[in-house]
Amino acid sequence: MRTGWRGSDAIGPAFAALYAGGFAISGYFQLTAWRAVLIGAHHVAPITALMLLAAVSLLAWVSLSARRAVWMSPARLAWHDSDDHRVVVLRRRLIAAWGWRVVAVSYMWTMAAALTQASSLVWTVGSAGGLVVAVIALLALGPDRTARRAGRAELVDGWHRRTVRSVAARYLDPMLLLEAARPVGLSLAGASILRYMTVEVAGRGHALLLAVLVLGVALVLLQLAPALPASLVLAILGYLSLLPTSSGLAQLWHYPGLRRWTDASDLRLRGTAAATLAVPALAWCAVAVLFGAPVAALAVAPIIVAALVRTVTRPPPRYDVPSPVFLMIQTMRGADLLMLSTTVLLLGLAPVITATVIVALTASGILT
Amino acid sequence: MGVDCVVADGVGLRLGQRWLFRGVDLRVSAGECVAVVGPNGSGKSTLLRCLYGEEQVSEGHVVVEGGIPDERSAEFRRAVSVLLDDSDTFAELTPRQHVELLLGSFGGGPDGGAEPEDLLSGAGLDGHADVPAGRLSAGQRRRLLLLGATARPHRVLLLDEPERALDADGRRWLAELLAEAKNGTAVVMATHHRALVRAIADRVVTL
Image 1 (cartoon, rainbow over the protein chains, first blue to last red):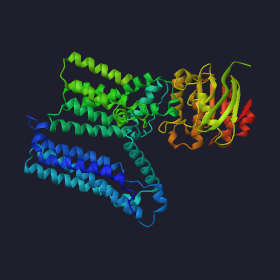
Image 2 (cartoon, rainbow over the protein chains, first blue to last red):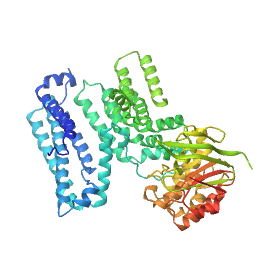
Image 3 (cartoon, rainbow over the protein chains, first blue to last red):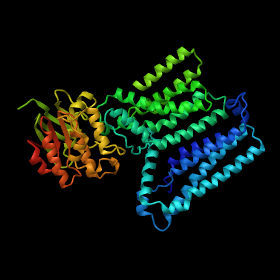
Image 4 (cartoon, rainbow over the protein chains, first blue to last red):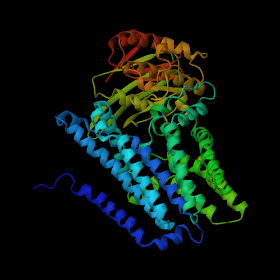
C-alpha cells in the first residue's frame, strides 16, 4: 500500500491553505464591507494603493534576497546528487519562491486598488510597474545561475536554518527563529551588560533594515486604512519587526552555557535589555509620527519594549501540559501584553488613567 | 586540612531500574583537586551536574559551599565556576569581548587585577583576540571556555573533561592553568587525561 510520506502531515497545511485562499478571494466579493472596516468615512487617494505596491514589492524583494529557497539536506546530497538533479530542484524551488511573492504582492495591489476605487490609469500604471519589477526581480534572482553556483556548504547551512524554522513552527516556539548577530567591534569593558546588549542590537543591522521597510509598509497602511487604529497597526508591526533585536537577552535567558559569562541578575538583564531596546523602538515610533502617525503613537514604544522583553524571557516551552490552551498561553506570552496595552490605549479613557495603566503594564512586562 | 568546600556522602543516582553510580564519597577543600575518572557512561558528567545542582541525587547528600547546590541561585553561581558539556561561546563575540564581558560582570580573577590582554596571551589566543568565536577552531574555543571558567572569582571549580579538543600545547597550558587555579580553590574535574591527573590531582575517585 502506498500511502506516501505526505499522508496525514499534509492535511493540516493543505486545509489551512484552502481556508486562507478562500478567505482572501472572498475579499473581492465583499469590497463594500471591507471598505467600511478599513476606510470608513475617510477619503483615500488611489495613489496610496501605488505606494503600498511599492512598499510590499520592496519587502518581497528583500525577503527573496535572503535565499531561503537555497537548501538541500545532507542525506540528499550524499545519496541523490547525480547529474543535474541538484540544479533542477533548486531552480524549481527558487522560481516557486519568486512566484509566491508575485501572487502575494499582486493580491495586495489589486485589493488596495479595488478598495480605493482606483481609476483605470492607476490600475494600468500599477499593474505595468508591478510586472516590470517582478521580471527584474526574477532576472536578478537568476534561478538557473543561483542554482548552479550554490555550493554544498551553503546548501547544508540553508537546510539547517530551514529545519530550525520548521521545528519552531511545528512546536510554536518563535525563540528558535532568532538568528545570530553579526560581529560588532565594540569593547565590552566597563558597563559590560549594557555594552553587550548594544552589540547584540547593532549586530542585527539586517533586522533593523527590515524593520525600516516594515515601517514603510505600516505608514502606507495607515494612509490606506485610516479607519484602523494607528496604535494597533504600529504596535503589531513594530513588535514583529523589532523582535529579532531582542535576541541578545533571549540567548542569555535560554542558554545556561552562555549565561555563565555574566553574573547579572535576572532583573538587571531585563532592565538593561529594556533600556537598549527602547532606542530602536522609540526611533521606530518617532519616525512614524514624523511621517504622519498621531503623536499618541509614541506611547506604543514602551509597550513594544515591554512585549519584547516579556516574549524572550518566557520559560522554555513545555509539551507535557494537559491542554493545548496551556501551550497557547506559553506561545502568546509577550503578544498578550501587547494586545492588552493596545486595547487600553483604544478605550479612550482619561489620559491620567490610560498613562497609569500603560506604565503599570509596561513595568510588569519588563520586570516579571 | 581546611574546611571542605565540596562534600558528597554516599551519593547515588538511579536511572530507571539501574544505578548510574552509587556510594560515592567526596570531600574537597580549598587548594585541593579531585579527579573523577571512569569509562564513558559511568556518570562522571552527571556527578558534576549533581555538584552544580542541575540534577538531583537519588540517595545520599551533597553540600557545596555550605549549602545544597542550586545553580538557580546567583550567589551560588558566583561561588562555583563550571565548565560543563553545555558551556558555550557567543558566535558573534570575539575572545576579547568574551573576557571583557566576564571581567566586567564578575570582576577580576581569584588574584584580581587580571587584564584581558594577559589572559588571552596566556591562553595562546592573542593572535585571534578579535576573531569572532564562531570562526575559531574547536581547540581555540575550548581554551576560551577554560578562560571563562578560571579567569573570574570563584571558590569552587567544576570541570568536565577540560582537555577535550586541546592539542599537546593546549594540554600543557591546561596543566599550568589548573595548577594556578588550584590555589585557594576546590577543584573537581572529570577527565580521561592520565597525565593531567598525575600532574594536578590530589586524589582520584573512580566511577
